[in-house]
Structure formats: structure tokens, C-alpha cells
Image (tube, rainbow, N blue to C red):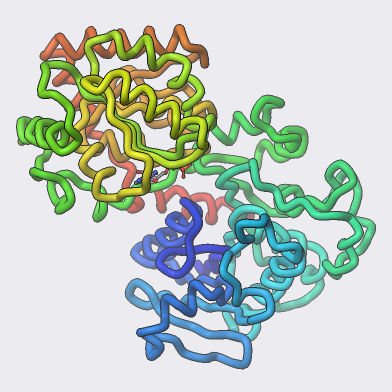
Length: 463
Ligand code: ADP
């Protein structure tokens, strides 16, 4: 089987979020499963910077294509166009999105498809990601449908976050090189605008999201972002595959960033991490559970719920560590509460990977009451560290956390949240029950080795 992964970001070359991690992992793990895979992305300034000291690793294919290799032998191609991609941002800068994103990503889509012919790689599947590459299925089914080389190539679109759709003024439609006939309610039109993502949803052969529950939720009015009807129409081709976790980075028995390595069989050492973390953060050593939060300080991540409950929670026998950046309101709220209850709560408003590792290792409970969550990484990391996640029942959180490995509440309100924290506190005081949950948490396996097989199965299922 031959697969071309087409994406707008990919580690280690260019990243703004989790999309890059997933797109960096998929090719490596497909290769391990003997799939013939190549990848392509724009030749951004970020990519140039990446290769600054390692130019020898970059080969020129022609005037506008460069190539490098990752893994054992996976070719990654870069489409060069300095006017479009030699900029400080991937999609925009502090003033907002780039005004020519429609042109930048339709150009990339066409060039990525042309690449197949240039390198004579007749892929069985092109795997696209998010709105930036959602025009590819549209081009395949319209412009390339009658070209012998491309006939029969199937497309998969993975939606990482439905919140970003690639919406543009219809005045720009002629730039896409598509027939106006597909600018209608059954095509790319979305409330009188062009929607790239809608095009991808309608024209791809299969659609995936990054968790099974999220694939159902986006078919509802509440989380469908206006596309629920279109997604419902594609229901039989829509499924969810949980992202894998990179266990070479996240593994308490090999983690050099934590105070003391530990594993399922040396769980006592986890508590050394707890003590040292409290010392480092200036929290008193008292016999209470330590709750950690690592993430964006935003409403989506449940900060609204935390903000409304924190005063009450600080009256309980608990301690909290917050690490995150995000909305100003939550920055100052956490600062204020930390001053009021210095024995109970500390907060760090910064991005700090090392401290994040120490929090995952040193806490008893990981707080992640996200309002919605396409997949979520924090809860998967915390399970690996034997730190029980406390989550709202949504998206990827409900696919990974349950009452046997953590705490989950199903009504997004202050009362249910506080009740669940109290329940966790009660169980914490029952050492036998607690140990059982922690042992269960260690057993969960979200390795890419396992998850990649689901993508291969999906590719094979396309007729
Ligand atoms: P998101 O929706 O932000 O992508 P995820 O849970 O999928 O949320 O992933 C967030 C990742 O970023 C996790 O690995 C988390 O540990 C990390 N992270 C988030 N904020 C911080 C921070 N302030 N410092 C260190 N790591 C962070």
C-alpha cells in the first residue's frame, strides 16, 4: 500500500499544535508497518530554520521541490514558494491570519497533488489533515478525475479540530480553479462563504476525527459548528481514531526530567516525586492529595468551571498546582487565589516542559475538565504516570477515562465538578481502592504502534 500524507505542519519541521505531532508520527509508524509512505508540506521559513545548520540533509528535486528523509527511509517533500511560505507565521502573525491564506493553501494543495506525478508515486491513499489540505479531495474528484494517473486515488481527511474551517469570501472563488457549479449548498458554500473544510468533508472518501466520541459529537448542533448536517450526511464514512502518545517522551520509568524514575512496580517512588515537587513549588508537606493542571488556561479546557469552584475547593483537604498560559482573566484569577491560599495552591503562568513532566509525575490527580476535547493528550500522559485524571465526559476524554482509571462527571456544572472532586478525595483516603485505580491507569496503552493499525485498517477498507 502506498500513502502520501499531506499536511500543513509536521514535527520536527513546523508546528503550531498537536496536528504537527500526529502528522510527524503517522509516517514513521506506517513505515514500521511496511506501508510505503511519503509526506509533503510547505517549505516555510520554520523549515528553512530547521535545516539552517543541517543543509546537507536537504536535497533539491527541482526548482520548487526539496526533499529530506525521516525514520528509516520516509521521504518528506517541501513545496517551495517564498512569496507564500517564507514568513514568520504558518497561518498568520500577531495581527491575525494572513489575508492570502486561500491562495497559499489552494496552491499547496495543487502542488502536493502534482508532486505525485513528478516523483512518479502513484499513491493508493492521500491522507489530508484539517482545513488547510481539505481542497485536495475536492481537486481529486473534480479536476483530476479524468486524468489516468490520478484516477482511483482515494482520499482520507482527518479533522483535528472542527473549530477551524478555512472560511473565505466567495469573491475569491475564481482563484481556486474550480467550476462555480460546486459553490452551492451541496458543495463548498457555507453561509455565502467558501468553506475548505466543508469541501473536504463532502469530497473525501473517508473522514476521521481524533477520537470516536468526537466523531459523534460533531454531528450534533452543540458541537457541530454549523457543519453537523454535512457530517451527518457522511455518517457511514466518518469514524474516530484516538491519537497515539509518544511513549519515548512520556514514560515515568525512563523520564530524565522527573525527580525520581518509577514504574507500575515501583509506585512508592512516585511519592518521592510528590514531595520534591511540593518542595520546589513551595507547597507545605501535608497529608492531602495533590491535584495538577497543565494546559491552556481557556474556557475550552474547563477553566470556567475551575474558576467558579476554586474558592470552595480550597476549603477541602487538597492542594493544587497549575501550569499554563492563556486568557488574562485566568492568569490574574490564579494569581489572586494563590495569594489567598498559599498553603493550598500554586500557579505558574508559563510554558515549561520540564515542570509539566514533574507535575504529571508528582501529582495524585490530573484535572482536565475540558468543555469539549477532540482527543486530549494530558489525560493520556497522566494515566501513563499513574496520576488519576479527573475529566468531563466529552470527546477523547470519555474514550480514554472511566471510573476504573479515573474520575468522570457528565454534567458540565459546578456542582457535579465539586462532587466529583469530593468523591476522589474520599477514594484517596481508602488506600486499597486508590492503589487499584492507579494500577488500572498504568495498564492503558495508547501507543502509536497500536493506533496506527487502525489507520491501516481504514485505508484498506476504502473500495
Ligand atoms: P491542546 O488542545 O492544547 O492541544 P492537549 O491536551 O491535546 O491540548 O495537549 C496539550 C499538550 O501541551 C500536553 O502535552 C501538555 O502537557 C502540554 N502543555 C500545555 N500547556 C503547557 C505548559 N504551560 N507548559 C508545558 N506543557 C504544556
